[in-house]
Image (cartoon, rainbow, N blue to C red):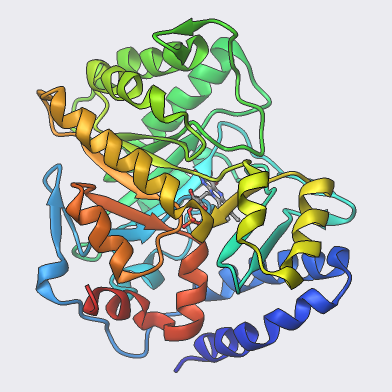
Length: 375
Ligand SMILES: Cc1cc2nc3c(=O)[nH]c(=O)nc-3n(C[C@H](O)[C@H](O)[C@H](O)COP(=O)(O)O)c2cc1C
């Protein structure tokens, strides 16, 4: 085991005692420690190469994926850690979310980028606020990466919450241009971070927020329809999306020429998620959402990510797309059964975030091997 794997294993055993500390202190300690840990993890590699069973490999959009699961956006915001996850056998590597300009992200009560995780219930909550260095710096970092076979590179792009109107749209478009010049293999458009303000309109078109429709149309006209080399673009929505909107969303994405959809991002449906917490986790959770708000992730999203993604597959098929279109599921993925459930419903790829850390603590760099061996 590498020292990083040993550290993760010990920290995993100690973490439940964090909840005996005052919530303010445990959240501050964890939020700080988490960032330091990502920074050391992203320089670490397995002692010996991890080789996944060949049956794990998938090919979509003519891109080879080692397997059908990889990290969700927000884990490697700076575009760091490619070689770590590629040598773990991840299906892909996803960097970002980045915005047009550098962002500090959120700080409150002396806590920067607050995150709390609840091991027993497999739930986390964060109020990061999209801290990032901006498209340009991260794209230039990604452009220098030498790819490992079967681990394509994706970039997540978001609108800059500090901008509005045309400035915001052209900031997003710049991201598309910079990442395609950096030769990334796919791009995910983040339309769903609950920790920043998204532009929205009271007006609806086919039941969908008019400003979302206009943003997607803008990207379609100015990027998708002008692509010289094909680079798949996926749109990521919230797991709080109203299921009744799924057919209209899929129809819109297909009509505009997008290549996939991801359900989805974190949730703010606190009243539902607090039911999944164990008793000693509740105090910290309540403190967190009262103080910061934030987006909930982990096991509690399993059902909604599945329902939305499976529905998206169904509607996409029924609309008989004229181009290759894939559904990605994110939210509560943690076991071989979750992956099998996705596969059975025609969901092409899965992403994970909250359970990745739990599985890394338990299985170190062999976490993908352990997960896929069982499926
Ligand atoms: C600390 C943290 C930071 C995140 N940052 C981003 C982000 O920058 N962009 C994004 O699209 N999603 C972000 N997410 C959401 C995840 O990508 C994912 O959609 C969500 O956590 C649900 O997956 P999970 O249940 O496997 O954690 C973040 C989640 C967490 C916990």
